[in-house]
Image (cartoon, rainbow, N blue to C red; front, side):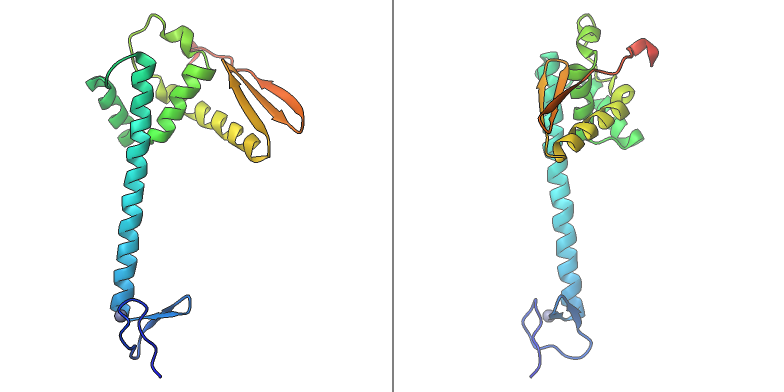
Length: 169
Ligand SMILES: [Zn+2]
């Protein structure tokens, strides 16, 4: 008895493709793969949109503006194109700078700008990576003002912000 194709359910002939115990016509399998690729691309696009929205919301809230200025939007685009930054990581960089580094002092008399991102990007990723690692190790981190208190196995450690200023960069 001939097997049927896992996609079109018509009988298989010779030369089919077997994947994970299911049989497909080569053309049906290609169609399945193409559909899967399209889904992946679409969900990656949705993820980018979500991160973009979160990034923009944070910037607007931080600077108390209704929308990104054209300059900011241009800067964000440039950073994505030139450095391969993602909205997700740019948001992490801003959060790191303004919430855990010395951003508050730096910004009080400055005009709204996201130009700090490239200067703190790597430090921010290291920082969040460390937080994530600690969390992954079954610990709980609580964020209070500029201090990150990380509890590990009942103990606690305070991580100070890196000791440098904009002038040092
Ligand atoms: Zn088929």
